[in-house]
Length: 537
Image (cartoon, rainbow, N blue to C red):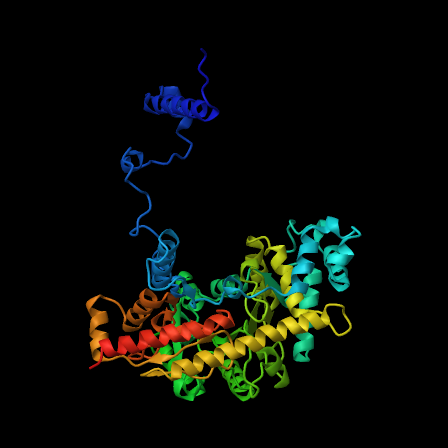
């Protein structure tokens, strides 16, 4: 009976023989002629430890990695979330093993993971672009709206090879950038140039690109709001700069005060730090405030006077929940003040991940770069070119977000209904959670004017603070961990976003579906009462 060796076993046998032969060659002394012929060739002298057969030896340890990586932190997906994922696995493996039956992720702005449905028109266009072969089929007319079919044809005509799997221009497909520029112009009432648009895989790579451009060493500082979205502190750390904090005023609804900027700028200068840019998040993350236009004017004047680049995070521009506030882009406000390209350097960030669309996984976004000289624009383009281009599906979605269906289009009414349904539900959820937090003992929460989050302050007793210190954790993280273990609700400690020393907060999204909000409030209320009773005094 013949024995057959599997392909895998045969390959392993051949590889073993090859490595044995190579080892013998390396251990064999070289002849003089061979030695001379190799003398002019650079040869790496490997330490003996790297040649060791000890499987536990590693060329990479915490002592040898880039220290900037160790310094970088990102609380939104930190320790609490890791614990939540472990609890979720336990619930799947052993149903009934905890007092709750599901994990409610209120830690991150990821709408579709919590049940939000995508906008139909956007997905129809995207599907048709990804599979253009169905555009000519007769049944397509019955499955897709006519304006989605027409838009797909328009977009495909602009993409190289009509293929969403092809590379594009490093700034993004020109026709898609034209659509975005037209959308910006319609929004602001001032001209926009598609050459100022850089399409990116979400807003995050654009932020990293600007930090890489601006930060030369640890003596370069970037103004960041406190509380802030951890992307900024993380990217500043990774690129070797210094975060210069300015504290938002919780007592005035997380107001941004110019006097605070001046004070922190003077403090930075006294330490030898050159502040290069000011980050403003509007609407705010994690704080949910919407800046008044007058406040924006003051900020622009400050940046112009101090020669700062203004980095405007405007990814929540569609998420406004109070009638007395409206979104105004910083570019619109600057142009209304008479500021032109020569007056202020401004970078505006937008993303398909937020708003009413919530397409986080599609990784689409852009930055609009204005007020930079041509030689600096060349450097920005060079950095974009290193990454070749952003993904085409994200580019398409970014163009659709800024150029949705218009009056008279077949999809217009259904699009408006979907958009309004999502935004009105988010507003109701925000109000319900805001009221619930303010009804808890020792908790105060500012109004959620926009974005997707609430950032309540929790007043903890000395007994609770000492209990947290005993387990070597911050008091807000201690509270959030206890909340998760008792209820399955995942929130992020305020210490991950920054806060005034001696105050404690947590960030909670408003994204769980509306029918789950009452259960969240009930669980949270019961837990909080028990926690406060346990640590009273």
